[in-house]
Length: 291
Image 1 (cartoon, rainbow, N blue to C red):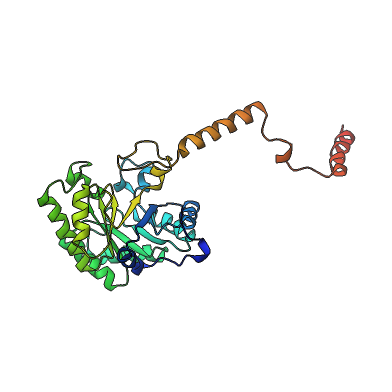
Image 2: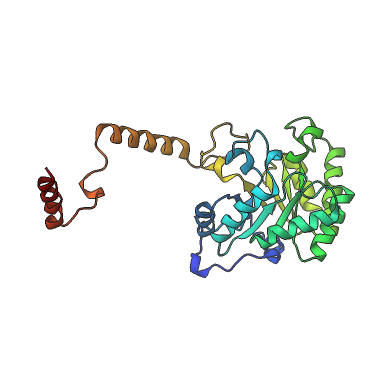
């Protein structure tokens, strides 16, 4: 449980991430796609909330994250931002929203900031991504980098494969991380890389690393909320720890509701509104006169 109350909690900002790393405060991040979930995570003391493009699959039912559009992401970003007081809200920039040109990337990123996000997340560590990151930070838009397994590049990667499985590949990811750090990224997500690789990268860059399937030695952790509460039932990644089984709870509650309605057990006396006795009598008086 959190060791501080909501009243004592100061809003997390972009500078907090570096402060957390220096203080050896493990950074916590989770995803949210709606007002109510964001409010719960914020009150639970989560440092950062990502409006992840994972919502394409877990909330909208798409087969992968590349189907969601900027317009759709903006709707969910606005909803999440309304539910947050202290957590740092980051918006995932969806597939092809920043790849065509730096100018278009800046324009789209600006829309997420207008929607209430405090930063954006972009995938990859190419020279182009670094150039975009530099321009974004110069424009006042903080950037969370994302390296290792990058879902938006799944067709190029050939599937859901662990990245950095050799010393050579780990050093390549490190160089990408350094490139993004130099471009101004305030932190970097490392997804699906061996624990040793993530540890090596974390020790050799100044900005924090946020792991997802990257072991115990990152500066912090991020997971999909629908995974840890057991709401999304299609599959559960190996690196996820389930803290609840919301799917079963909701399904059971819905089944009980269906049964109660069918059997007449719901609504009960305490669930209904009543006319004043005099007014109720008038209804039947009116019926009798018309018969």
